[in-house]
Image 1: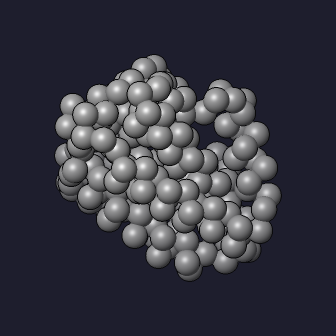
Image 2: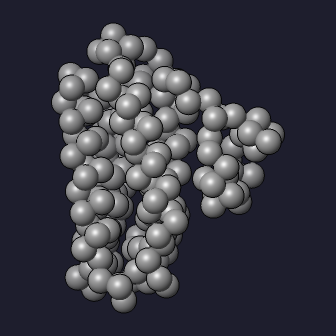
Length: 180
């Protein structure tokens, strides 16, 4: 599998858009509900932070020829991590999300060309580490909408819709209709 350049560009563009929204978020707004049931906006940002860290671990392991695990603590550990981080001050959560995104970009940049097909352990099973690029793009776009901070389903870029059409059809079919 080759380097997923189109998805990596999509991640960078989506992250820039999300990062601008994070810069406008206030601590009061962060404690308000998101579009995800039971999650505040702070939970969403905390998840975006932890997701990038999980992908850093996977990419770093793949670069070393090992199988990386997205969330070593499983579903329960992921949930505890999100809840704990969501309770932190907003500036700490946003700084963590920004630092983890930068670390992920660096990990992808350092990835050996022949390692993109190295297996990695996602929640849904083992897949090539190259999948982290599309999965991260998805996490940023979907959770930007979930953040309820300015991005609506009809604003989701067409290139993302095209790249992740199967996932969207299964998990967010209403978005496909809203964007076309």
